[in-house]
Image (cartoon, rainbow, N blue to C red; front, side):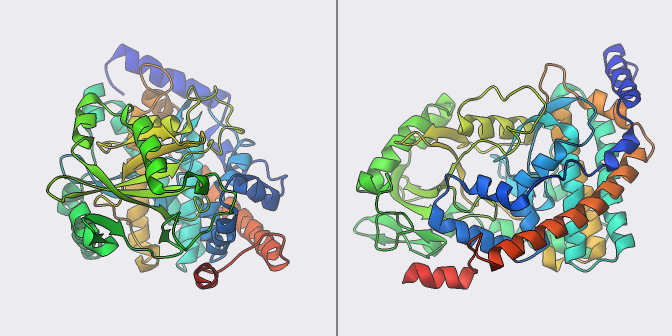
Length: 476
């Protein structure tokens, strides 16, 4: 512990919380009295209905894919788990594939959380438990034995615990300056396989820039850049290929310019004045609909291509923001933002070590909420199937470290919560051991839920299509 009275008081307050919520109690899997199929139907409401079968088709590929796409189910279950009563901004969908690399505004490659669609105030334990269960499911997915699965979960949670203790004692400015750079990770890598993995990710990130993306995604026609249709993943809303019903209000706009102009005007005001000036150098060229992810399939997502006077491109992703799945389950005070795009952007700015210049939010012409960010700006992620058990254990430690940094700086009240959480966790492994048990039991529950989901798809209660079948239908 430090020699600072304020820190020591917070640490002691966190330690005292063990009397009301024992660290060993976190093995409890939660409130499992629910119908996962009905929760999935609930989360599909308001989406582009012709895309919902693709969402379910992607979730059918494995229990781990199902887990990635069903955050609402675990949010329901977590509401029945014990927690310390420390609330703060959390990610809300903290599985291991929502971490990755991306470029800072200074063009340095860092590792961090990179998905905040579900960010919301809530118990910090909920992020840690979703991450722990994802380690167990991912390890099982790549064929690890149970003992190794436990080792991977344990390593990730102990990394979170030890790094949180370190981050909690940093001065506020030092904590907010803290970043996990790929350069530092590569320099510290002693394992040859880990070094090779990092080298590959660094090389891949260098090829994911706006300039290199432009000729791959678009071509110049009559003086402006037009993105290439690649259905069902990328297509023009008002072109021949449609997934929208004929009475969809977006189609009533007639062309993409009307949609883009309204969104940009609303979005521009959420940027700082200097970044508004920067955006002013670029002029809209084209807009297309993009199908993304697993859990996000069916929400409205657009790519806006802009270019400056010298034909240098800027790709912006415009993603629909709907209420977080945590909103109906979190015991914390309600989110203070009524605009869902603002909720996402604010949570990201609080939790991420560095944020995109173009991160902002806006409202569509029919009242839908969106947030903006750059598309694929040096963004990279690990391919789970390429990892062996030892590499996955390294990766679990890295995710635990990144989550600890995010939690140490995110808070619901002035002064931060890192010291309280660190005091609650202490230095022994009672919490980590409880989370290993939690991950074991919750992995088994996810597999049962997956079988129930699969049966619902087989009997037609939930419509599901493979990528190939969906693509063929779309072209027809």
